[in-house]
Image (tube, rainbow, N blue to C red):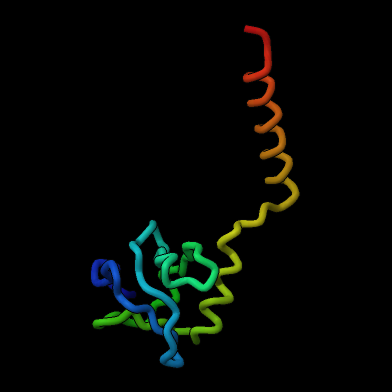
Length: 102
């Protein structure tokens, strides 16, 4: 297991193929948050700490840069049907509270 305390702000993240993936913004729970200034879409992206192989002056991943970037697709956190219903119910409840009688 990698010592997360070795991961520092502004460290370069490199895929197992040696290609640049991003730059560490900070650790966020069990994930590495990458800077958005280093992102092609200008958004923050996250990598699971389990993708880290080792840390020296860089954060080295155990997957290629391409595979790591495919992980970015999970950043949008698509909701399943049940979660979508709960979210809709919460929205309706809050709208009722805001628009209701005072």
